[in-house]
Image 1 (cartoon, helix red, strand yellow):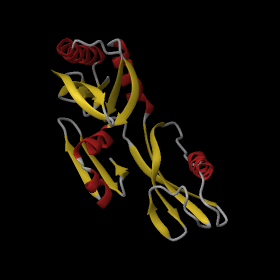
Image 2 (cartoon, helix red, strand yellow):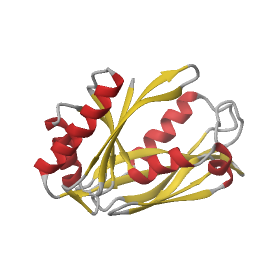
Image 3 (tube, rainbow, N blue to C red):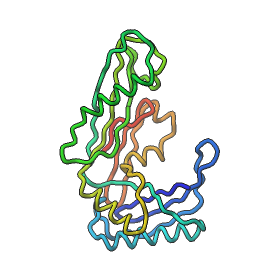
Length: 222
């Protein structure tokens, strides 16, 4: 089972899905309750938020006949920041190996300067091999230089801690935190739109999220 929890400014929704076949997910039950403890995506009343999470979860569990422990949770608050970090390494004309990918991602990761902020996402938006830009799978290609654009999203840590605290008080384990614009884009756009380039605008009750996709990956969010 996979369970997603959306803690929004006007509602808390819970989806329980079962993974089938080639990673297809069948939604088996859902729960929906009004949210009074969240304003502008940020938690302002812990008790109200915990109560809404518990109520939405109880509704979904009761209909599904399943007990949930781990949840994937969205995050809309914390003044999220989106940035792209570039890195390159020399491969000296040889075929690119998995070890080269690990090396360049490690180099890019070491360039991330979070300060006092908290990392939420870091993934390669695209690779390039010499003059070939927009490479999605460079392993096996030949060239002199391998480049990567690493998309990084971070946020202020306070809202993350508040969210995790509320979820934990509802007797759940927040296994994964996902920025809301990223989740909206993955849910709404089809593969062709992500590849050719598209923006997803999610107008919510308290916040509006924007995510931009190109080359099959998210390259900006706010």
